Image (cartoon, rainbow, N blue to C red; front, side):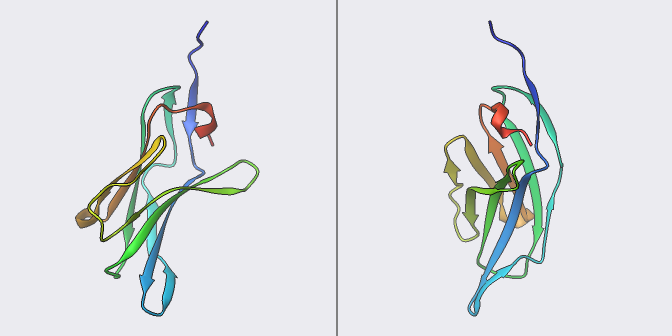
Length: 115
C-alpha cells in the first residue's frame, strides 16, 4: 500500500557562491535563496531558486544540504564559464548567468530531502 507523503524542502538547502580571484578563493558578496521552503508529494520534482550578486567574471555556484545533525553535504555546483548545466544523481542545476540566477532541481523527491 502506497501512502501519500508530503514533506517540506528545506530551509537547510543552501546555495553558496564562491568567486575565484587571482589571489585565491573569496566567498560571494550576496546570495539569496528565493523561497525558504517548498512542499511536494514524494516522487514529485522540486525546484529551489537562488539569486546572487558578484563582480567576479569566473566563479562557482554550489548547492549544499544541511542535515538535522548540523552536518553539511555537498550536492552539486556550476562554474560560471560553463554553458553545460550540471547534474549529479537526482540533483540538477538550471543556470542563468545573465539573470544572476541558479536553481536546484530535485527529481523524484524523497523523505530524506526534507529539512
